[in-house]
Length: 602
Ligand code: G6P
Image 1 (cartoon, helix red, strand yellow):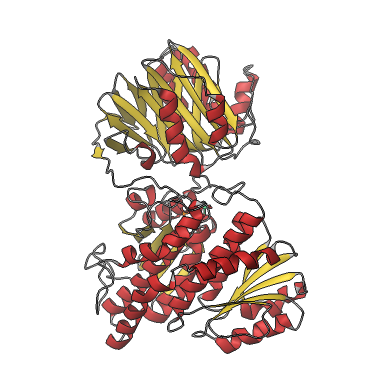
Image 2 (spheres, rainbow, N blue to C red):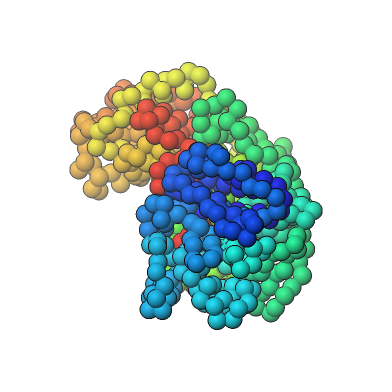
């Protein structure tokens, strides 16, 4: 992943770079750096950990007059998060920052080392700068040297390179990792995503894979395999305002509270009185489609799993779900009667994007469900439905999951309506339930404080099982993932009926079971499964609208007229539980260790 930034112009560069890096920190926060060339001399500042450390280190630095600058926020892939491994990587007279993975770096490194090049870091990135300098030493032309470098690299990259031999130029290239160029008068910006440059650049160009070039004197020269090319900038919309905590302790907490409101946004214009409208899909969209395949990662994969129940049950269409990183290498059998759906909060997840490209090559129709307009996945798909959750900053996804699940529910009803596999009455009752979801997502003070009190009993023990059946199984997976991500405690999601086939061996009083017990879906079945665990002395936190006397702790839910209402209300409970446990353990809720919000490496 990692985030990269570049700026060329007269403004104070430190402030610009640090401001953009702060908004890119969701991409990783193992180390942060800025580097400039002013008066033809390279300068750089590196700090391990989050941006506050870099701010401290650069307190007394101020850039002066015209200059060029680059910055980087790292999520370590090759080599530990140390200062030596932090970007920018330095050759004799050049610096490079990079997001992605150079797959042939071992081979390149060995060849450079046999030419006498000394490597300072353990990263793949450092090879880029040494190859550039080797090529420059041969040709004496900086841009030729950069183009030759790009040609040699294999893997995924978005990279910026600056050099004392061309102190007014930033060289750039993109292949597989996101990069865009922002423009304002004669100033040029580079960034891994557009939100950080809003308010700075007024126009933007999103680079395509295989594009590279250089910028100098306020002009960008863009190339691809066919040589220099022209390009069209587009206006950068200013409505993607940056998120603030608005009085909440954490972004994640704010985002949990926002779910009720954003859910209404997600439904707006789509969920009507008696029908479902999806203007994003043209009339022939479902022509020739007999099955659905969905690829996603992490939390998005859990929303996909939930939807498989809905597509088969409501739309009567076969639906398979795959983890994108598995799908890519299994040589899947793809036929053009399959609708290929990708789900991604960020729209940049490398595995999901590559899965989409594979499906497109096989001639499948593609649809993405995404929270970020203009993201790589949205641009690559034939059609897209945006989730409208607004910016999600907490690394542990909450409102993105809720709105993805809602879009998928809407889509399942849309397909059922178009294919006439649903009666008018059933459609109406589903729509009525949908319109009640914002209520089921409201966080009351009573609920939050109860979970705050309860959380102190769940800080130790040897692990958590979240269990559920049907759509509550993916919710159990998601509940366990939330807890893992921000508490660092071991948690697993399991289908309740499967516990007896092995995991029940772990049952004792130190095992915590979070039981999702919806009234509207297989209540008696899950009740028996929980009783089996209780008989083995497991500590049970039951979440249900029906009282359950064997529970050690109990959260009573209110909205039990439809499974999806129970789903969303229970989802909020699991999110708040994870949050409160994490707070008690003193962890960084919004930026948990080792994770990143957007994963652009495979
Ligand atoms: C990362 C994030 C997860 C997210 C996953 C997929 O691992 O930490 O929260 O679910 O990527 O991301 P996407 O943007 O494709 O939904």
